[in-house]
Image (cartoon, rainbow, N blue to C red; front, side, top):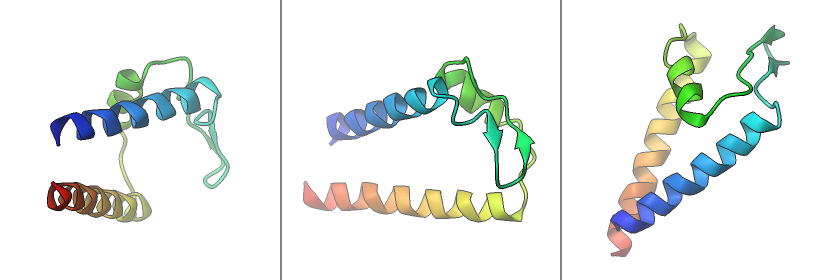
Amino acid sequence: MKAELEKKIELIHKELQEQIDNGVFEWCSGTNQQLDLVNMEVHEFTRQISKWDFNDTDNAIWYYTQLTTLEQVMNMLEEE
């Protein structure tokens, strides 16, 4: 189980780094503002995001992400 979770984290880490490297997080068209989350590593990206002030929409996304992530972990545990 631990190895499977580590593999999943590694995959997400790799995908996020590709998104960062491709400039996906340079600009947010939804809010029309510059994010400037480029030319950095994933750990720098997550550290920068953790300093943001979040709005109600961001908070909804946070809850969605938390619930779906934990549900995925529970499903993985049940499959063991």
